[in-house]
Structure formats: C-alpha cells, structure tokens
Length: 294
Image (tube, rainbow, N blue to C red; front, side):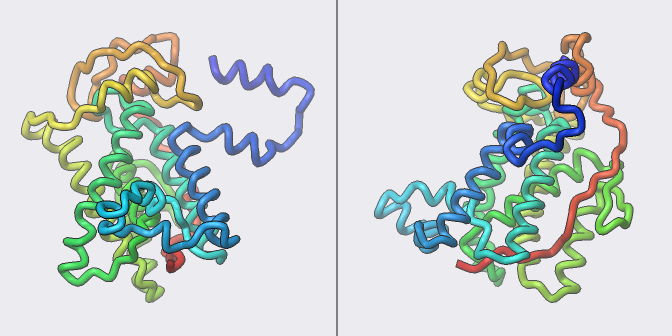
C-alpha cells in the first residue's frame, strides 16, 4: 500500500516538514507537469530570458512559421510577477490536483491519469478552436489561456463532485456552485478576467455534456481516451509517476459503476469502481485574480 510505504520512508524524519521538492514530487503526474511548465515559463519570461510575445497564441505564426510551441506556451504563462499571478498559479495547482487525484470522468481508463490527460487535452483544443468565435461575439480575451484552462478544470470537477463541500475564504459552499461563486466574486470586483473564466467554463460544460450526459441520458458514447495514453499511464485512480500498466476493457458509462473488476485489495481502486467519494472540505484559496497581460 502507498500509505505504508510513505510511513516507512519517513523513518528518522518524524516531525520534519516536507520540502518544496517533496511537495512538488507528491503532486499527481499531469498536475506536476502543467505546474512545472507554468513556473518555468513564467520565470523565464519575467527574467527576460524569453520574449512574452513568443508565448501568446498567434495562429498565423503557427501556420506560416511553424511556431508549434505556442500550442503549449499559451496555456503555461501565468503573467508578470504580481500577487494575482501567484494566486493564479496556486489555484492552478489546487484545482488540477483535486480533480486528477479525485477520480476524473471515466472515458476509458477507469477514471485515472490517462482520462485526466485526455480531458485536459480536449479542454485546450476546445479553448483554441472557440477563441476566434468568442472574439467574434464581443469577448475581450487575451491570447493567453492559462486561466481559461484552470476554470475549465474547476467546472468539470464541480460537475463530477456536485455535493462535495468546498470553501472560499472560510465560507462553506457545495462543489456544484463553486465556479459560479468565483465568477460572481470576480465580476463584483470589477475584474475583466471573468470573460476568460466564462470561456473556460463554457468549454467545461461541453466536455461534461459529452462525457457524462450523453452516455447516461441518451446512450451515446463518443469520448474514448486514446489507447497510447492508457498504455502509458495505466488504469487506476491516478499515478504519481507514469508507470505503464495493462489496460482494462471499458465496461460502462462515464462516472458510473464501470470499474467493478478493480483489484479489491486496493481501496483507491475500489473508490474508482464505486465512484462514491466521501464529501470533503476543500480550501480552494482566493478567487477572481486576473492573469498578467502579455
């Protein structure tokens, strides 16, 4: 068991606080990669090692100059050094970790790391595709989508865990209302970043509709995590490191009792099978902070 191993590894270090490196390596693998890339890119831009112009999304440069890194950099730059940027990065880690470790919607990998990677990929693609449409209807969006993707993840988490208890600045709130509470706070503070939040939440609702509503209500199952992701990450709740494992066949709809064959000796996998997670209070941090400009 992972818990037993953790206890053994702490011998001789009773009472020691974990170092930043320990906390970083304890993050689920997808959250760790996204967070690490965001920290590196944000620091290199702010220390003027990388020009911020080269991080933003410019479709013409991608097609004509083959600047394909913009597919990633536009989701990993948090903004200039400021308190709001620090809060945005903190929220990125908390939202992503909470969903990845809390069993994502099952699209073929038992609600595991591969499913979360696929979910994040679809969110990024959806944001990029709808960006010009959002501009066309009057949205004032920056060509940096880190915040959009953060609220995409938060919205999907809220749909997966509608009755879980969270809190904002000590005020309890059910998970289903959490994205809208942040949105309301941002609007009341007069922060124009609410448009990026709305964009991410809209894409999150599209994902939720296709991943959960269509299969359970209409019997239409369209989303399937690619086999190479399942082969690489394996099947399970989540993995702290990308250890390949044999993939199990998909046995049911999204978010339902689709992992009944999970190893009964692993309580985490049993939670995946039952999909009944106990409600827990999550401290989500501050809200409504705008990402930096280019």
